[in-house]
Length: 137
Image 1 (tube, rainbow, N blue to C red):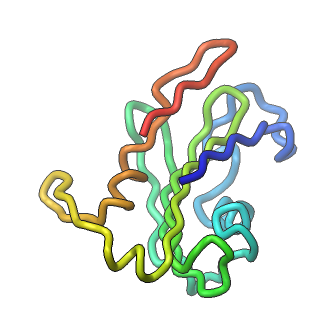
Image 2 (image 1 turned 60 degrees about the horizontal axis):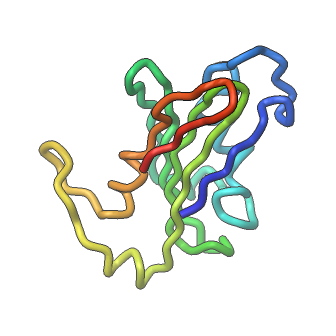
């Protein structure tokens, strides 16, 4: 698992405490950050298996599942992205086919998910102060 924190000024966003909508649409964000998820190449449209916009406790998240055969990090990649203060925060997990196939399933609500997806689902920013962002998984 990796956590990447990007100052919004690096993304040429000057608004103080921007929302995910200020950063971009769910399609534009994946196009911009997919190389950070895969460790190498941008994901092609057909490699994005699932994308979802989620709102939790008033905070918007974009969540992605990628199947990227040319990625350095692994064939399977999942990520969840949000903003906090003046930062874009991304949690991502990558797995090879063997790791993905071997990973156990857990029940979340009424649905069963692979554990790796569950870890991304529970990623959230718990809050922030002027000097710290608190990330929870």
